[in-house]
Each structure stands twice: as C-alpha cells, then as structure tokens.
Length: 197
Image (cartoon, rainbow, N blue to C red; front, side):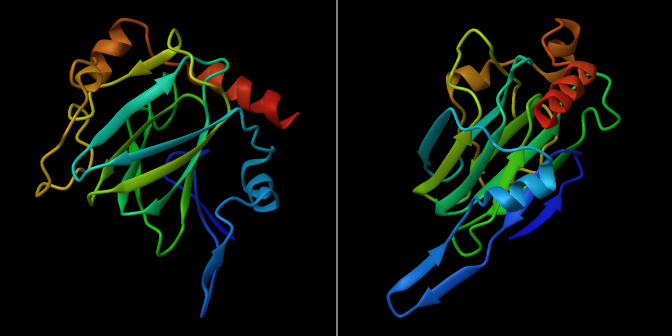
C-alpha cells in the first residue's frame, strides 16, 4: 500500500497492490497498518456509505461541524470519479485551496480526508459507485455544504454538471465564511491531536 499526502495537509491518497489471476482479482483498498503509519491514528468506522451516480453528478462540497466532524475514506469500485478535497478550515495555511484525485477500479486507489475539510466528487461515467468509510454517522443538524460550482474546482468542461437541489442552493465559500459556518483550523488541529493521543 502506497500513501501520498495531498496538497491539503492531512488528506491522503492510498494506492494498494492489486493481485489479478485467472479467477479475477483480489485487492485490499483499506489497510489499517498503512493508514496509521500515514495519518498517525486508527480510522474509527461508525458508518459505511454507498452511492451510485450517473455521469456528471456532483456530490458536495460537503462537510460537518467540528468537533466531531466526519472524516471519510473512500474508493470507487465501479466507473470513474473525480474526488476533490477543499481546505475550508478558517485560519489554515492552505485555506481555500483544493486537490483532486481520479479514483477508479483499475487502481483501487482511495482518498482519506480528515474532519473539517470540504469534500466533493463528480461521476465521470454512468453507473459510478462510491464506497465510503465514515468516522461518524449522518447528523443532519451538523451537516453543511458549499455550492460546488462556486469554487473554481477542476470539473471537466465537457461534462454537464448535475446537482441536487440542496447543493444547488448551498452558499459560496465567502457566504459561509461571513455567516460563521466554516470550521476553525485551531479546533480541527486540536481534534486531530486528540485522535493521535
């Protein structure tokens, strides 16, 4: 398992070895030893999520109030998706910056994003499946979102974006900042330190 930290500190891409044979293949998309070595603490799994999306569907930009927030570890077992991590932690040295990774079942690579970061994805093919491990269950009172077309994210120009009504009416980053809806970098780093202790 290879681990690569993204441009947003604390977010990682994990790429496992894939073992094909005449029966098919075997792969372990999540491996705790590699995860702990990269991130510094185990991944607590409170909920698993599964989504299927047609080409162009964007889910996000989503995040949750910290603490506790919701960290995610996700991969794409079918289709192809563009996964985007956005630093929305007020006071972070990389505030407003993003990084993107294409996830596919050819590589079985995964993205981990810690609590307090914004997350969005776009299905690049019909029938794209996303499988998520989440550190907290769904809490509608703590769930937040930003408009995914307001952040100059790297959505492919040739694909027409498809948004949910909730994402289409979400605030911009500047609006969420002015309303005090974004996580604090200090609170997030304190939470990460607690997880590592």
